[in-house]
Length: 123
Image (cartoon, rainbow, N blue to C red; front, top):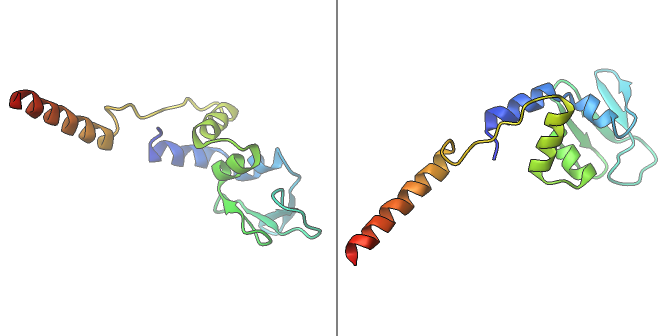
């Protein structure tokens, strides 16, 4: 599990134009980049990459997202594998949230311990 802060930092470092350009050839068009969509067959470029928002959208099929979502779709990877791939590509050390660092999991663990104590006392 990764923290939201870590994912945000990763997305800031992972330039979406570079990420997508590793898979398909982008052509600059004003402040955006365009190409044929890699997710469906088309004859006119409808896939647009917006460097200012670090996002992409295909106006033909509706595919959209950020660098992580693009890699998940194009490489058929899960979220964890995609984050690890981006970290490796940009030499970013992977930081995961441990069970004790995750407030939700820590709360659930404490509830479980309290319940187990009550069960033992009831015997």
